[in-house]
Length: 307
Length: 274
Image 1 (cartoon, rainbow over the protein chains, first blue to last red):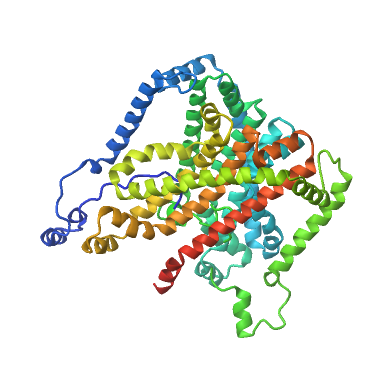
Image 2: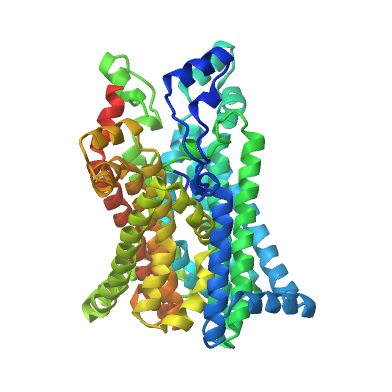
């Protein structure tokens, strides 16, 4: 149910007989003919089908694109050429670096504050009831609606973009952390108590580690939202950064260069998502899918979803 | 989520003479917190520069002003039309493609790289291209909403369809159902909980898409109002529109949750029995 996760085609099912643990079981399964051998079809080589599908789309795009006005729809080879040209002239470096710095600072602050806020609200009911109206209201508000307000207050520079990144990522992180803390299994806490741990120790040594998969799921969601936030803010100000560059290329009808940036942003999204998954697998090896799948908090990735 | 501690202890009657605990008064604490914030905001907001900051009573007045001048009634339907059209196309297309892809490994493998690429990239980046193709009108905003809302519906529908238990499908086959009947009468209802989760996620994202599309085209709708009032330093009006968008977000997500709970009630009973 992790829609932010990678949609992997189900791998071809191995026949039941091959999954048998020993010879006897295998023979029994074969005799029972639970899974009659079937001819290997195209559907068994999912990887090749995926690759073929990508090639097909690229070919059709190339053919159709070449016959249309290049201002309207570019085509893959022209986009590759534009990418190489942009690399050689170095026009990408400054805007991308500007975006990266703002993004990293905003996201870092949001992770720190979001996890802190989630833990605080999870630990102390007083803090939870005083603060949760704002957290859920902010979460249900599209943060992009606040962009004009921040531009008004903080100007067109890096500060307002950093603030947008911060706010975009804050809610998913805080809410996910909170629901992680709130759903820690009572038996884990009781085991800690039995061993004589006080509230503070239980919180530090039982609750926080148990909430880690939720915290990471929140961080992953927050990263995606932050990417949307910064690009939107930069497109609206149209001055600096990758979003500004995007608007300028589109204004100049340089469709091939727009596609280069779109591709790079897709790559950035995939890399950030992949990094979050890798951290998840490394830090929470005890969850089946490394914290993904059914453990991904349903309340956490939904606007206004109360735990 | 188990029973709340206060209700269980109250039932046994051991809560008598307990110390005051915040756990017992969630609603009062929330109301007090919001009221305190409003008072502080009103007091400090009145002292600040009205061009940059505002206060609750001014926001209330601005909201009434928007309502009376007819501005809101002109722009809100525009926004809701965009939202409804984009969301509708996303749900119809996402559910259809998701169900079929979830039952066919071939189609799933062919679609997966493209869908993954689409959901990894921030959809905003495509808006300049959409403007080039669709102009600045209704079409570009619907397309933006679609780009935001489509991936979660598709992915959840296909996850649901893939997980439909083989035994219910066999029951259908034994009863002589055709492929289409299997899909419509068994796979669709069985994947409904997943589909509705996808739709709930899509509603929130569609609202974001709607606002972004309107901010960037800046012609009609709530997003255009936000841009306008920010540019002319009408901060109170800006806040009124932001609050309206927030209310829309809360309302829509509540409706989506309600529909989800209502339509998948059987799922909860099934779990309770097991």
